[in-house]
Image (tube, rainbow, N blue to C red):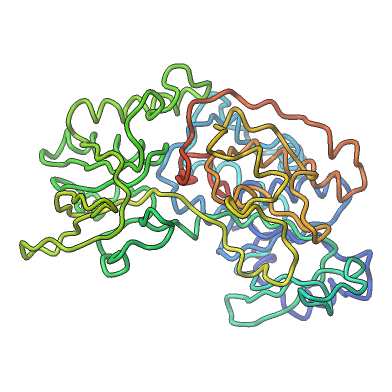
Length: 457
C-alpha cells in the first residue's frame, strides 16, 4: 500500500471532523460510497470539475468486491474498462504508470492490480478504507420532514474497522457500492428456496475458483447444479467442462427457468464483445458434449435432501419435478441492491427493478440487452432527494445489463451536473457495442461476467 493510501486508512476521527466542518459549506466534499471501478472514476471526474471527493470504502483496499472474483477473466478488453478522465489523473500523478495492452482481456485481479490500485493511490487522501457507511440522511431531517430539507447538507454516518463511529457532512452523495454483497437466492419467487439456508454448506453464490486446490476438489468428479442462465452460468459450465477433461465424472446439471432457444447462449460470433460470444459457445459445447445436462423451465421451490444417506441436495421445482441429487449447487441467479442504509433519504425507485424511475424503462431486461441500453446520465439517475445519485451497478437495481463503460458515462454526467454544467451533463459521450443477450427476465449475471462489478463496484 502506498504512503498516501496508508494515510487514507489511518486518518483520525478528530482530524476528519475538523476537515469536514459542517459550518463551512465550501469545504463539504462529495461523498462517494465504494472504491470500485465506478466509484474511483467518479472521484477523478469530480476532481476534474473542481469538486472535492471523499471515497468511503468498507474493504481494506480498492476493488474489494472485484477481488472477490479476481480469478474470472472479463469479456471486455482493457480499452473498454479504463476511464479516460481517470487515466488522465493517474498519468499526471504517477508518470511511471504503464497502460495495459488495449487488446488484452484482464482478469478481475489484474483489473485491480494494474488499474484500480494505481488509481486509488493517485487519489491519495481522497480515499478512505475500512469505513463502512451505515446511514445517509439530511442534517436534522428524517425521512418525513419537508421543511427546508433541500437546503440541508447530507450527513453520512460511518463505522470504522476499529469500531469507532463518526458523521461526515457532505454536499452530495454518490452511492457506487454495487450489488456484489447481496446475491439473489435460489427461489424462483425471489425468496430463499425452502431448505436453502439449511443447505448453505453445499451452495456457492458466484463463480467458484477452480484453480484453488481446495475448491477444485469440491467439484472434481462430482455433480454440480448450476442455477442461472447468464454469462456467469456460461463461465461456470465452461470451467466444469474443462475440469471434466482432467477428472472424469465431473458434470453439471444446468437449471434454467426458461427453455433452450436461439438466444440462450447469447450472441455467439455476432456479439460485438467477442469474448462474451465465445463464452456462450463454450457453454453450448458443454451441453452438446453431455458434460452439462439442462433442466429447462425449472423454477426452484425447494432444496430437499437425498434419502440415500448422503444428505446431498435435491432441487425441486414449483411444478413438482425433482432433479437428481447433486453434490454442490452454484447459484448465479443474480444480485440485488442493498438499500438499507438509504432508509432516511427519498428515493424514486421502480417497483420492479429497484432502479431509478426514469432509468428503469431503458434497462428493463424484458426488452433490453446490453447493446440496446441507451447511454444515460444525471437526468435518468435523479431521485426526489436532490444531489443524491445511485451510480454504477447499483443504479441498475436487479437488471442484468450493466457495463463498466456505462458507469463511467454516468459519473461523467453526474459530476458535470454537480458542477453546474447542465449542457455537459445532458450530452451523450458514449457509444455502446451491440451485444448478444446479456440475461433474461428475473435473472442476473454475476459482476464477473459484466465487467466487475462493482461489479463493477
